Image (cartoon, rainbow, N blue to C red; front, side, top):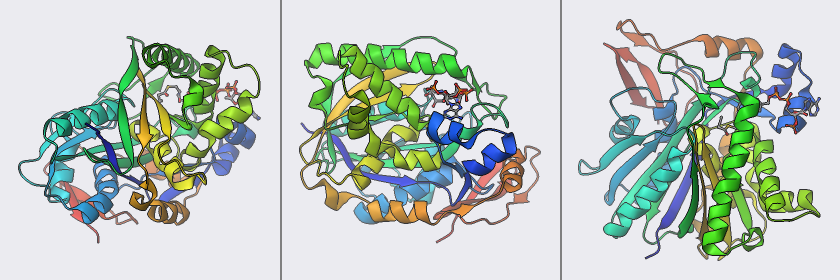
Length: 390
Ligand code: CAA
């Protein structure tokens, strides 16, 4: 039975910081950001947006189009969790009026959990073919101010509808996985910013890609030339290019690697370059970007995917694009979203960064910024209060 992605919707916040301004403020060469790591702009979450509002705003176009009736599973993938107990997905369940017989769970394994959510959702709908599942990946990437990770920060969410008649992509059953217990990137419960051993994390990412790919290619006999395009987890865009370069080298490709990387990976990177890292969402933001921006029709073409979550789990998998997929995309909405953002300056960025959710149990109302369809209105007795904006 075919299972896979029927709809994919991306959301990022209405505010952003030009990394030229960050480079000037940190005394860094702008080219280090734009050329060295491959980032130009980062998304900024205003105080009344969080992983819940971004997730609900990402999912809303899908719900508006297909309704809620057959959705009986929400898997919420994040590493920016807002509660140790309640799933962020339940707030989304409420905001989107999902049916009471819809299961809701939050999943965590750094940036990888969106991928296991997709795989689990596919298995659940295969067991009950008339049902649909919503996989939502939503994250805010935060590093310490002034740290090497700072220019890779970002925010965003991707919602995917998973069905047994997927209008966009059917998942192949095969995969290669590499898991190992390492400390390349982590965020203890008492911290709002991640710790990262930056250079080490890039080596672990590349090794994970190599090992996952080795398994996948041994299992399927497929080579990299069997993929029309490849999408990667994108902590910063050059990481995806480096990973593809590594797999090409592993496969014995010596000549023209730069051109091959541009042809196979380049089109999936432009959204991430201007949103920054969206952790769990970044691989699927890359897929949405590829679908939205490629000139070449991808109907019936096979795509390769590498998902990576620090700590670490990596997975190489693949899928085949459904003929006629273009009529089921939200490309115009994504374009408008990215083109209509408001630039903040360094002072505004740092002020927003330094705000944190009050923890004293008093009632608070949050200043209204521009948001998507939902906002975090305030806090009452340690409870987050959300509201619909339009
Ligand atoms: N012009 C052009 N390029 C320049 C330059 C300039 N003026 N100055 C520097 N560069 C290049 C460097 O040569 C280097 O290129 P290579 O990687 O090809 O060697 C690149 O810019 C980065 O510069 P540095 O080597 O000086 O590295 P840095 O100190 O800025 O740190 C980083 C880079 C480690 C990636 C840092 O941004 C970081 O810690 N990021 C967060 C961690 C991360 O994203 N890790 C990725 C793997 S883990 C993962 O994927 C999970 C996740 O989502 C976090």
